[in-house]
Amino acid sequence: MAAMTEVPYFVQVAWVVLDDHTVKRCDRCYPDGWCPRVAVSRARVLAWRKVRHLR
Image (cartoon, rainbow, N blue to C red; front, side, top):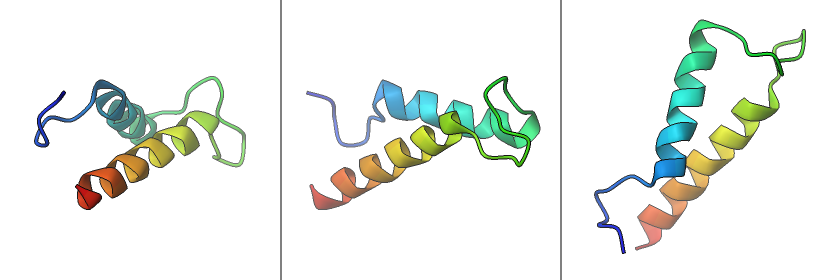
């Protein structure tokens, strides 16, 4: 089991996706700026924060 201070791999990847989208868009971004990858990444980070907070 991972230590509480260790960030899970999928959460690290989610942060990379969020950081990359602040600089440039990907091929899945809609013209209005919404992106499904960003939506999933935000949900992962928020879920991880909730789980970490409950422990």
